Amino acid sequence: MDSKTTENVMMLSYDRFGHYAPHYDFLNFSTDSDNWWYKTYGDRLATALFIIKTAEKGGGTVFPKMKVVISPEPGDMILWFNANIKFEQEDLSFHGACPILAGRKIAMSLWIRCRQHKDLKCQMNDKILSHELNDIIRNFD
Ligand SMILES: O=C(O)CCC(=O)C(=O)O
Ligand SMILES: [Fe+2]
Image (cartoon, rainbow, N blue to C red; front, side):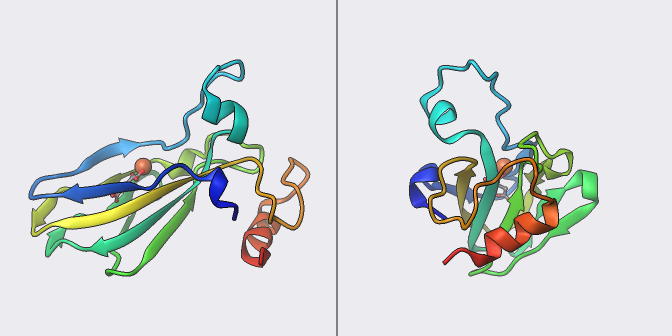
């Protein structure tokens, strides 16, 4: 993936009771938005969350609409899509960080935009089925 199409990394540090209320990373700006990032690189296709340190208790990444809590280990990367194949907001991508009950969590998040991935083998468009999208993401070199 072309690093130009990602925003700057965001460091996240959560102390006891620190949390991130459930939200969408997809911005859903109107198409005539004059936001430079939006106009140039589109909305947030995916989020990569690099786990540097996990809390002793709590602090998982929760996807309430899928009833899933991810409890990663340091060194893991969690990747999820914020957009569906039509580049609309993916309803299931609603997520948040559970409160820290003990210790500290440190993570780094990277928001990957939709457009201008010159290394992708084919351009993404709405003719691509979602299982093909997985292959495209896996096959770029
Ligand atoms: O820290 C987490 O588990 C979630 C972070 C998050 O929602 C984000 O970086 O967009
Ligand atoms: Fe998020």
